[in-house]
Image 1 (cartoon, rainbow, N blue to C red):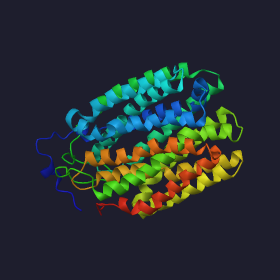
Image 2: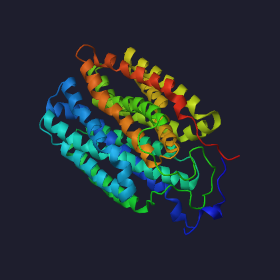
Image 3: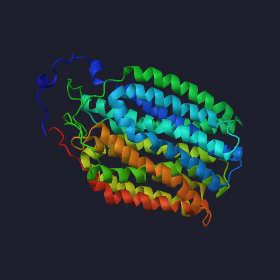
Length: 410
């Protein structure tokens, strides 16, 4: 597919760098999301002890993160169209961070669940809003940028997990960590969102220097109602990924502490290693997809994630845990950003397709925590996690739905 001449696309639009968006600002917002998420989830054992919850009770609290996300995610596309992704991001970020800050003081499982519900409401909208802005900037820049931004999320998650590990190692409570992280993250969001651009179907501005990627598409026609078949299948792929990433955030540290007898610091560091692997893989993911194709990369990814989960769950060894976590992260790394790019390429859907796919995907967070938690009634936690390997193999099956729908420029 050939782009129309730049002159024909730039009517009434000033030719400035600002019109192309700010990839660094988008990247920092992705990184902040990773920091906040991992800094919170790396202290799950402390939250569990604080409210004296069993694994099953804790799963019911953790499911509220996914439930809260699903409550508002379907409306995020329309909210961004009406108010802009920048404003939606600021409000949702404040809600998410308030939820984490208050969760640090929860005295019981029901109160913790209510705090995590609030956290999930903000997290889900924040996630969709930053991906909408990312898709807009990716189109305007005419480069493959989404994997790099999701890499920023992963590196942020590494920083967040290391933050949690440091606070745990020093014996500092979540009552100190959570509010401190929330205040800093809110300041970062408010500053970076000032450089966000209007969420228009893009391509009305001059391209930046760089290669035209497969995710760059011409302006979308008016959006259609309902859900298309490609959105449903891509959503299932993202669901499997969200369940896999959510299971690692929710249960990886707890599995190593409770089932392997390892210290909380080791569990937090393993979670950091998991996210570090995701981040590094995402840096090269865009080039790998451009070279051999999105579908093949996704199929190999799903198989690799399944192998890593099996290794971690079936082999009782700290080394196996580290290698398994690395393969788990390696396998899931490019799936979510590829799903967002594939959703953005669905003809006639634009931001709404991203919202739909994100909503289906976040069902993985809703299903994962209670599914694994309830399985612990009959299975050890490390064996219950084997169900995640089955969902990783689902990625292999539905990957063809995420094939490129536009051709890169010669």
